[in-house]
Length: 394
Image (cartoon, rainbow, N blue to C red; front, side, top):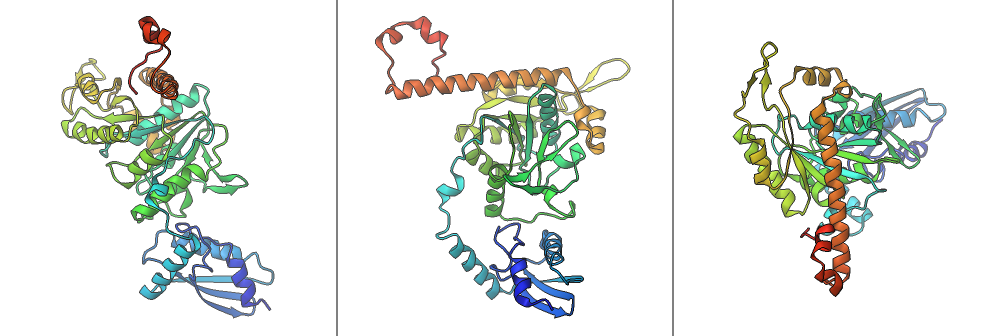
């Protein structure tokens, strides 16, 4: 007959997805009943309506079914009392030693290899940021690059749906293995970690912060040239974590002609400026609706002033894109990789060139800094050489 000790040992392999400690040491395993070859366990969750309850129950059942003699496993859940929750917090703090300092939580991570990280930002919902992330990534992939997408919109993830990917993520020898689209584009999204993608992810700031960092560091991205990061609207925890923690090459702003959208996008641009994140350019989405019969452009969200707005933000206008029914249909069908547009192709070329220019400026700035801010007299006298190497403030 199976023993309670064997059950407890087996369940040390089941991790809480948020806290990343096993459910036994967290004292979430509250009760075990053994009836011959049948096992009943009671798991105490940290909050009522926990969105990962089904995932934990499934993991518990799968782990116990690996034991010999076990024929049936029943998993029930309850909610921790305040005293039990306080005890759990003490266990977590003790396990991690002193609580992480704020500097540790927001420190800049190193690049895994030599990839270029591009965050796609809008500040406002409903302007087509996620679809733009998918379209840009697909075009880069079509151009022959190894490309990934990190869906940092952890409370409203949509990237997996846009690409038609549903297979749950797996853990490999070198970390989490990203899902792949038909073209080989790599994806990481919270929805691919949940049994039910419609269950809300009700997570507080610190959990979101740590999760986003882990979605970059704990994933086996392999050899990757470009990693695009789809950010949620606003200037809250998730965007702040990405701006402060990930080694970004720059951000692409997405807006519409509507003044309200521009105002909110300006907040994101100013936030990037405060944190010294380069602006790679602005995409004005839903700029106009073109008549299928006569070709006239109808500016239904207001007159397009993309160039002036980009200049106001201190960046360039990458593209002015129309309303297109095809994009919505392809997103709903999970076939966004099929979308192609010459403006997007040109946008990719501008983004790549801007990133290379930023790298060149950064290299020169490093040389100047290492020289104590002063170059040789011969260099300082040669104005033409200064222009050649673009010695401008970074």
